[in-house]
Image 1 (tube, chains in turn orange, red):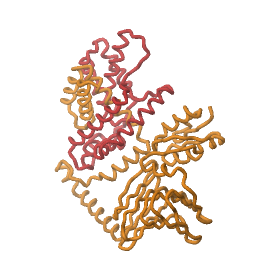
Image 2 (image 1 turned 30 degrees about the vertical axis):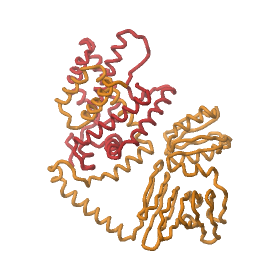
Image 3 (image 1 turned 90 degrees about the vertical axis):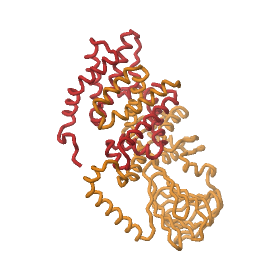
Image 4 (image 1 turned 60 degrees about the vertical axis):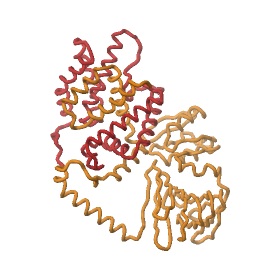
Length: 323
Length: 176
């Protein structure tokens, strides 16, 4: 990439951003046209920048982009110091209402002890630091309540998967999920819940799991406990423990996994669901490392490595079949 | 806030008016790009026809910026054809073609993944500004108000985001 191109690229981005502005003037157009006509590089650079921008529109429905947009919407709600005093004057009444509603919300939040609801959308992942320093990673489509008061720290997992890195603190730490309670003794562990089925995987330290009515179990690192709506706790060695928490870095690792399981796993991250046209495909064993939400790369790998053909059957469904 | 644009105007009517008003601008631009005077009318017409594809998907404020891009491509195509290079290659800087081949579609998907990763990797404020504009369709003044920055700063963040997209494409070695 040579210098002139780089300069043209920077100027092209500046020009395009200027022309998208609703206050671009006739004088701007005039100056832009002169810049554009000055060299072919300039005109090309402009066309390329514009094409990238048009391209980006196609991502509006992408779950990760939608989640990031949602996050931006929440982070920037207009309470900041806006430019333009006149505008502020005309908005003064509206702003007062917003501020009042905002502080009322804050008081209600404070009064309800310190329970905080945390959630992620489909395809979204999120890292949260709790008031005690505990680090949580929320996987796709997860919902939980966190309450920390003077005596205890408690999470209630309603749905989804979390990775918990518990901060050292004299107050006991527990996670309630389905029928069970996970009590921790200085640890990193994961809890996954879908409906009434819960899996607890211990990465380091020690945890104790107790069911309301059916006994308890203690886990050693690398072990996984499962329980459902009925029955007891089943403890087993977790599969490929070193890969168990890779999802927190946005990576899914599969080693000789049933294709049926793999599809169920990746479908949790996407609004576009993958379906097997031929149920015998579910037993196929598949290995690979995929970026969370990168359905395209997965489909590509299946086409190339496993002779599977993929057909987009609707806006939100892709069908897999044997070639 | 009442919008300054005529509220009840139908998008199609607005587009027609845009076309009428931008015709002189477009012709001036094309002659600056050294499109021969015999061809200016044709190129202008073809550009408008292509812009029509974006009428309902891109906000009216973006039409001018888009029209410039399209006009550059149409002019380039024509110059190439006149040099009688009988290659079937079409516009270099077109966004996804609606009738793309499966191969084209696969590389588009790769490009989309790259654009997505680039956007997600932008600094938070820059990313927020870009997404508010691109996904939510907010104007610069609206974004400025939400972020508590000036409209000029919004423009700067937009430019930074656009440049990041462009740089990522360059790194991927996909200069098309």
